[in-house]
Image (cartoon, rainbow, N blue to C red; front, side, top):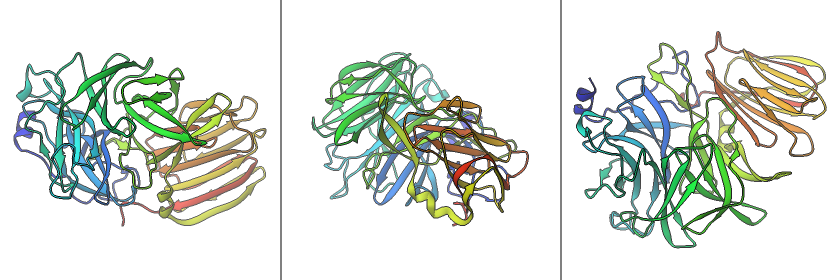
Length: 448
């Protein structure tokens, strides 16, 4: 079956998605059909946000890794396009990244149009056509964002060891060079450099205890001071300095992602407003009897916030999600309890709590609970300590048909989880004192 699937070539996934499917998320990205996992090649190019992703177009189970493809003008409403990269004799198409080569250092540009250049792992041995072939790193490019050509001199990085994979490429302006972070094995990563995206030279090694796979590396500022972040697939990260050759850590690995279904996140290259926007795979969700399997988180903006423990990553839903608001169902204080009926299970909830007051927000079968005695917040089976910051405790929650995403304590506590509802959640119940509670009903991003 797999060989037949590959022989059939790239299957288009550009068909419209039925809004009526009972477990289809309405504003979290899903493949029209088939399996989805890691986000890949997140890049802004020619006026569009591109979302490539690990995809099996022939089954709702993992396998036959292909790069699916969708584009958006606002990171909320997505247009599905034909798949971008399909398996070949070098292997199936594992995770990677993409950049805009503004100065055409690669020579792949056409006229004044800079190319989009994509980097992927050719997973040798994972399909019949690549038996006995090791994992290597490949390159593909495009000048229109719709058609993609693999480099005829692949691999650009030959086999190193073990699972070497998941290339993340960035432009490092201070050293005027392209840089690749690549996963090796265990908790080990490696840094490469290139002048032209085609020839790569090893620069240094890096370890991330407690993390593996899917690296990301990027810079953020806090009070005009720059910090570099090196990120692993499970959301552990190091803060430090990066000279384009070596990452100099100033912290041990820090845990940031607390949700049970949040993995293999990647941030956008060339974001036009210079925001650091991240999307993650919500792994291990369940969607019985649906034609698709798995979904992405909502896009979230990352910043640095100063805490008692030093600078830490904070996460916030992107501002564009406010365009989904269609009705404000509630906006006032809650003194002891409240029940807010809604006409939809698609909700945005914002709450301000006193840190010395217990409170509980229940949406259907899901509960967000704050315990003032232990200063902990619980949701989706996870519990996190709050209190790094003084003042009121803020909670932002986004509810989709099968998803709850919580951002608390000014974004220092992100919890993303999936669930299978027994029935649609059409009310919000609150117990305890809430200084201000806002509830918006949201419209589907699939309807526009």
